[in-house]
Length: 203
Image 1 (tube, rainbow, N blue to C red):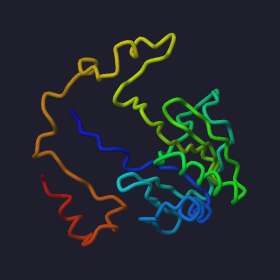
Image 2 (tube, rainbow, N blue to C red; image 1 turned 90 degrees about the horizontal axis):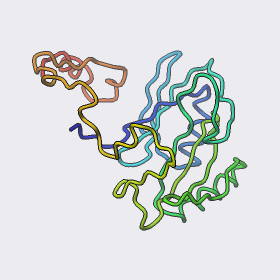
Image 3 (cartoon, helix red, strand yellow; image 1 turned 30 degrees about the vertical axis):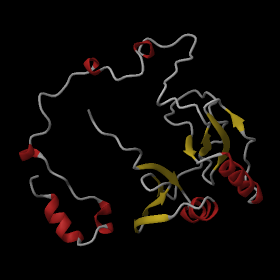
């Protein structure tokens, strides 16, 4: 079984990195922990938790998303609706709501979803965002619940992964074929040149 440890980063897009920094770092309080760039290219990372980050590419010609309500169906190509950030409790939601309203940024009322309480807003790029506080005593990870009155066929198989649904490799990639190739972020690591050399080494 693969050991997932969370979301390393979500990669979003902006045409205005400064406005994005002002929102995510200065208004929401997420540290700007890494920045990559060269003429015509920027890729910046903000810390959500000790483990999770949200990142932005700056593409000067990109247009803002069309604003739409969170969860409202759309037609045509789509692959994203909104992202929810968890906070420790309701007090954090109320602090965020007050901070957004003081900055004249639209924010919804607090909504009770049974297992979380949430508020909704948009960042400067019109990315739909949600902030969610867990409800005490309700843990859908520990106690999964399928409340769909007409669940899909795959959902009827239960919460646990069904390992026989996909072909399995005979073995992992053999050690002699494992290579790690250098990417733009190499500059963020110390001794980048040594890392580039090491990345060509067989593991």
